[in-house]
Amino acid sequence: MIKVAFYDAKAYDKPSFEHYGEMFGVQFKYLETKLCEDTADLAKGCDVVCVFVNDTVNSAVIDHLYKIGIKLIALRSAGYNNVDVKAAFGKIHVVHVPAYSPYAVAEHAMALLLTSVRRIHKAYIRTREFNFSLNGLTGFDFHGKTVGVIGTGKIGRIFIGICRGFGMRVIAYDPYPAEEAGIEYTSLDDLFAKSDIISLHCPLSDSTFHTINADAISKMKKGVVIVNTSRGGLIDAEALLDGIKSRKIGAACLDVYEEEADIFFEDRSGHILDDDLLSRLISMPNVIVTSHQAFLTEEALSNIAETTVNNILSFFNNDGICDNELCYRCGNIERCRGNRKEKCF
Ligand code: NAI
Image 1 (cartoon, rainbow, N blue to C red):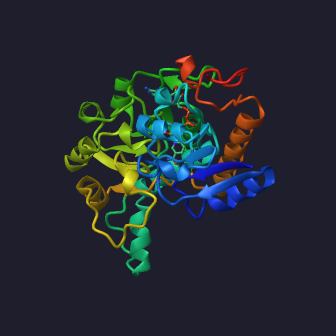
Image 2 (cartoon, rainbow, N blue to C red; image 1 turned 45 degrees about the vertical axis):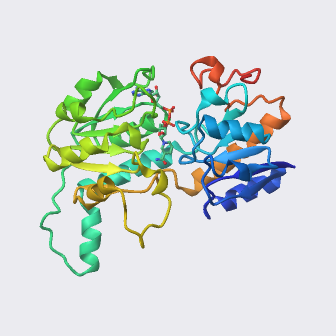
């Protein structure tokens, strides 16, 4: 039986992982704590650690896991910016779930956008208190507006399709354009200048860190709406707050936040929030924050569990060859997907 230490386990994770684990002989040890240097030892006796977006998988943690015999790090997410894949090379293999429901994330981005622009979050509170006034609830039509999409991978392209359904003009920026997708690509600066709405769908990396910063905001239209369902580090939150205070930014819809690691996914309602920047953002009438919820649909949870269990099985039963391995050796970590004939090392 393959044993898996499952860090940062939540109640909603267990049913689908139990289902596929029992079906294929994979045993999960659920740990509520996140993976970090202090908690790495809890994986002793397991073959695999299964981690999520806010677990810390840096070189110190990797060295510790390697020492206690962990052979595989199985991310149950698409993004892997929290894993030092370079440090893992030659020691522990890393697999992820490249796609589980891009629809879940793209639809959540649109849900946030509609909620914000049509002030649904305000109306909901008002009518519950029998306040039926419309003052301050004026939105704007999406039809005819320009949406700028940064990152046209799986999620970005689905979001584009949804926006087109609303009659919006779509422009996009991606250093690796999707050929034959009929997308109008432009430079980042041009996208900033022309977009009424900007939605981020690229991974967090050195080159995308703080894509939205003070300089970028200065190039944007007054009243621009910014949507981020990708990773918090794509936005300099201080600059975002300044942009909101100066009325340059019309609204922000955030499912992710740079410093979310110790805050999101937990009930902090009885505590004082130490993060002044997040408190200030949440207090703004034109900011909506959800706590990294975009992936959370039944379909996505089932696909995450199924792919994670399959990744683990192919690693242990298929000479270690797994299509979803993050292959540091290739330089471009995901490049050899689909025609993989050997493991990364
Ligand atoms: P993907 O890998 O299919 O697409 C990413 C796209 O970003 C690619 O087309 C790539 O060329 C592009 N890209 C790379 N560098 C770029 C740059 N410097 N500027 C603009 N574009 C760049 O990934 P997918 O599945 O569409 O996911 C996108 C992101 O969404 C993930 O990296 C992850 O961070 C985030 N995500 C968030 C979730 C949530 O619950 N909030 C759930 C799942 C993913």
